[in-house]
Image 1 (cartoon, helix red, strand yellow):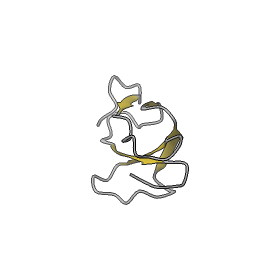
Image 2 (cartoon, rainbow, N blue to C red):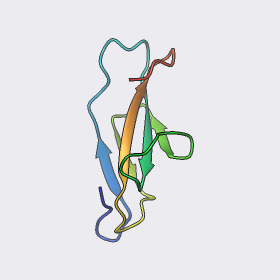
Image 3 (spheres, rainbow, N blue to C red):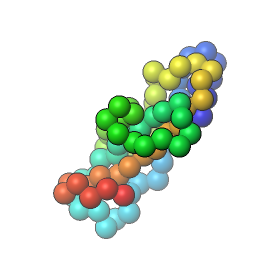
Length: 78
């Protein structure tokens, strides 16, 4: 995705995690300028309970790649 209109804003949304997850689900959202990147602390953009996020810190005109991982209450990752 590329931030448009010079705003540096990218709107992300994804489907909710499967119902087999235990307890409340959080979503870890990772971002990188590299297409195939390893998610980790240095690429973690946000953690949220929502299935959407507005990235307001994306560099305008720069391609960004995102990965979302669902994590349940006992740290199972999907």
